[in-house]
Length: 192
Image (cartoon, rainbow, N blue to C red):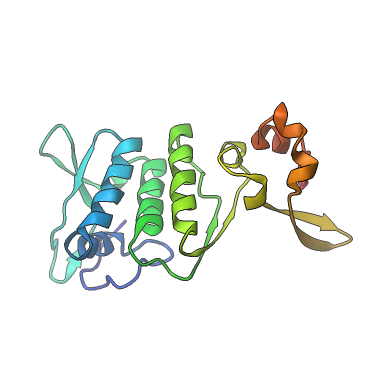
């Protein structure tokens, strides 16, 4: 997360390059959403104190943060990849006005198992007011969903078919297994 224009705040870029400016705007224009993002981050990174919003060169800012237990200021690269990924996902999913459609590829990569549970909760909350398309191969993420929320990509005769899971077909299976376990047993389709 390098420098970004301090005024580049209207939408979060697909690569989150303007995350620092976007969060800065949210802090003053949507403090409740901003607080929700910070709290989500603290749940997966208990050491996280706050973001430090400041102009680091004329018209430029970058993602800076403070530890909860000291006053030192750190750069984004001093966070783990998983923590940075989670920060981006929290900002994307918990923003006040997300785009009409969001497409996210394998958001669980690099996340701690607890963070995946929290991610699922944020995905479901966001899906209540935006079209959300998420691809995953995570059995842990599937365990947080219902069959009705899952569409499996199957390859047949050189084509990709998108098929909803049949809750009736899975009812008996789900008395003994979770969706994630069925995925691992290759009972849901979507074979490699």
